[in-house]
Figure 1 (tube, rainbow, N blue to C red):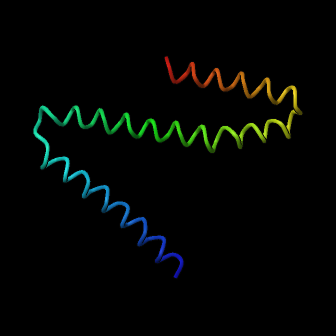
Figure 2 (figure 1 turned 60 degrees about the vertical axis):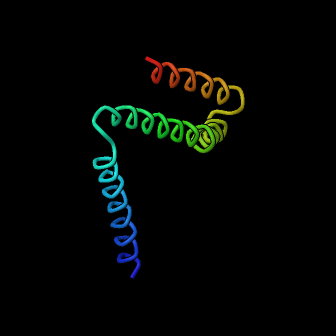
Amino acid sequence: MEIIGALLISTLAGLSTVLGGLVILFKFKEENITKFITASLAFSLSIMIGISITDLIPESTYILLQTYGLTKGIILCLILFVIGIILIKY
């Protein structure tokens, strides 16, 4: 029964994606669709950055502090954070 529930939820998610794509395809004119796609990508990027900041960074910092101790853990966290920003920016 758990497998059927998981398959049903993933099928609904896929159908929702298709439905959203069809709305974009039929509702927007050709010249407006690039603006809409750009805004949608910017929104999804901000959501992913928010998830990274609120969930992934604190968890990874905690793991680094447990593994390497306080001083090395903080230094590694800051170095890796800066490397991540540089990779995203360039």
